[in-house]
Image 1: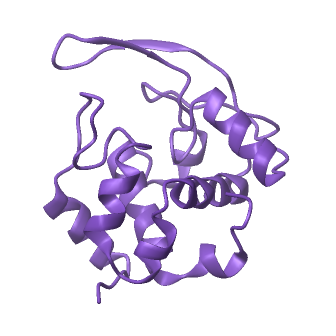
Image 2: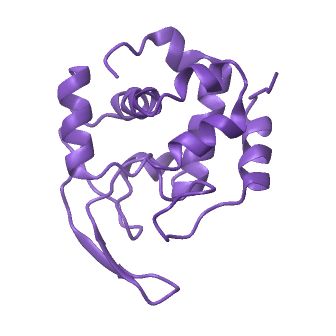
Length: 158
C-alpha cells in the first residue's frame, strides 16, 4: 500500500476507477469529500471525523458505520491506511491517495492500470460495499453502471 506514487494516482484508468467508487458510494459531488455515512457533512479535514451513524437499509437491516469521505473510509480502515502510507490529515488529496492505497492492497492496481476493469472491480468489491459483487449485503451498483461511469471518466480496457 505504501508504494503508491503520483503516477499511479494520475493514471487515467485509476482516476476513472476512483470515479466509479465515488459513484457507488454516493459521493461523486465535490461535497463528497466531507460526507459521512447517511449523507450529513462534516467540517474540517484535520482527521477522519469518527462519527458513528446508524441507518436502516432498504432491506430492513440496521447498519452502524463510521464511513466518511469520498471513499467512505471506516475510521479503523483510515487509521491503518494513514499509518502505512504516512498520510497526515483527511484532506481530499489524502483521501484520493488512501483510496489508491486500498486498491493496491486488494492487488487491483496493476489490473486497472492494464485495463482489466472487471478483474479490478471484483477485487475491490471486498473493500467497497457498493461495488458489483460485494459480499456485504448492502446496495451495489451494477457492473454495467460501473463500466459506463468508468468509460465516461476516461478509463479504457485493453
